[in-house]
Image 1 (tube, rainbow, N blue to C red):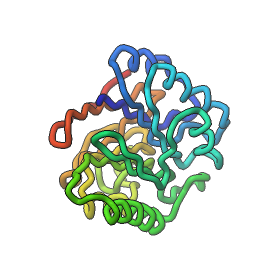
Image 2: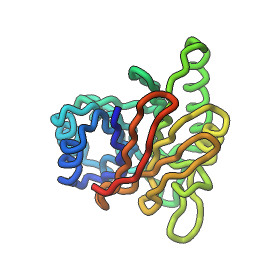
Image 3: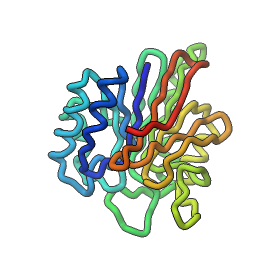
Length: 226
């Protein structure tokens, strides 16, 4: 399975994206939020359908700059919006949660960190309660906000502005990969315990990350330039 992770599109097309997907046999594109720049929702349909036309599946969560209705727009375009949901592929799971912890900019998709924690905790805990403990699947946590105090949440001024809640979730559950975004300048691959944290950077800057999963014990992650 070859997965391309992108983030922070902000209503800006990037022709390099389609070329990369077609030239690298990508199976799944994961979008970690901010598909739009406060709209328009029509962009979501246009953008996602171009990816799907490359014979790719698409999974996305909303970002803090996406307006109300973005999840419906994602689904209408033929993709999966996995905000506060879990979806299962053959050998791996994606737990999704969009929006971000509060920012100084009062954007529409901000969520209190305590709610982020309780929602994701309940999502993962409920899955684990009803799932067969003998079946161990590769786990991806897809968020817009990055975990606190990592390379993925470091802004140019030197401060860490990510979510304490997401970091706590990563530390408390056996998450293999956290794909995030939100902080445009923090394109990076980092580790929190056993978890690989990936911020692919801003799509407009040709930022992306390639994840290749052979099986639950064998995977590779790399930052790429589209």
